[in-house]
Image (tube, rainbow, N blue to C red; front, side, top):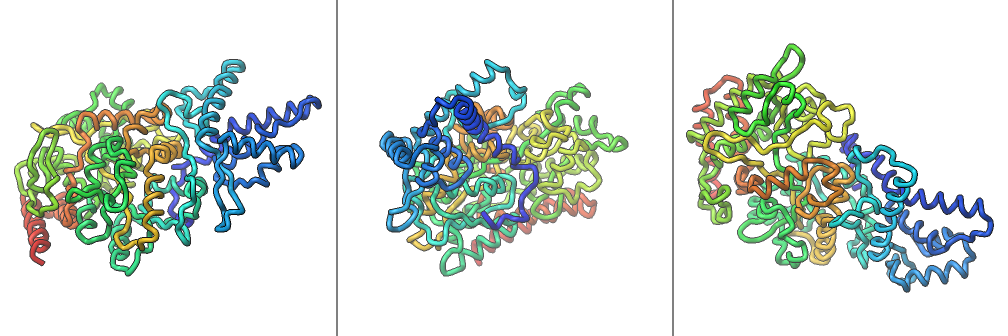
Length: 582
């Protein structure tokens, strides 16, 4: 992850989170110092001193050795050595070889010690607040990466180190997207290196460059990466082009607990009955809306496209520098996504998918028997809806894409915005944002006769098909760590607002960080989280681009809605036909 310099999004992973994660440990250190310095009769507790030193190192991602633990004990060497052996024998410390000879060890807290620490730190915080009064944090919705965070029932414990370091010469190599969630991993680099026992080198690219690099990597004799992040719509293309290896061939998928993943996110990782990745981000596109502005205007949260247009019209006030709504309307890929999702809002998938309860069936796509369905009556209603949205959008809407639509919403100049949950930190973690604490989260409002949909986006992490066999086992272990509930909770505590797992979304501390997790879980249970709006067929990237070009001409007034639909349909048909008969 040392290649992330220059990609970090400021403010998304606060340095305060790291300081707070060590707060209880520091408090106990200071109490120890005061007692020993004030009362000469009190001797240092070697067990406690070494345990605190070990936990400090674990949470701060620093290597702890037997020598450093003995030095932290403040007792004579022989005594400290005996106490250290007692802690190892008691199962409180895991030792991991640092060299091939096995004569040098690094020390790590065991699951037993972490569990005991969780209980102790929770009691310390509760007792101190009960005795001396709280410090106003109850309403602050902050999370802490220390024991207090995990004291509630059903809380997910912190990450523990692997029993053996991964055998990956040169360290783990990862290719990811440069978005806020993956950037959170940069701040956690040292901790993950401790967990897996090797260095991590990560490259982060924009979405189009990421796809290009993944495709180039597949043509190399051997992969440059052990793990790559894959946008959900690419799964079919990457499976067909042998970019990724089927995971069921190299690991037992049951160990991942598939039932814990949001159904749409887990199904989207499959092609032809095989899983090609593990969800690392499940980030639906939602409608963000300002609850305070809606309340002032006497408006209800919009459940339909008509209600959305009414709200946008009421809240649109350019003279005061406020606009009704922002969305992806930049030419090409950005607008193309909007077109497909808006068609879904009117009940029309971009392909002729069979309708089933709760949506449309996608399991047959690997058979190749599908065609584009753009030039339809539902497609026309979607096109006319987008034209109507233009009236209540900011003047630069036709150049707005992923981040551009969220920044003005965070700044307070937009009343509503379509956006992925991964972008929520731009306003949720900015104390100056008028949208902070005032944002409601909804699935896409639906057109007449259609059902609300929250189109699923995000990334899976997969293993390149051309990865040398001697690196596959290490890549599988690292993949399991990065997508585990413990890791997902850690990402959220450091600023992420994406989550692929039910268990993480129901964690009490996670729920306190943002209402977005409860909202998304509810949408998932109601079958509103769907990935069929962007079916992962090999041609989908081209189809998205086509729609983004033809509909951009329509929004600029160059063509009519029917012309845009016809041209998109004709070009999409040609792409699909060419792919079948190259």
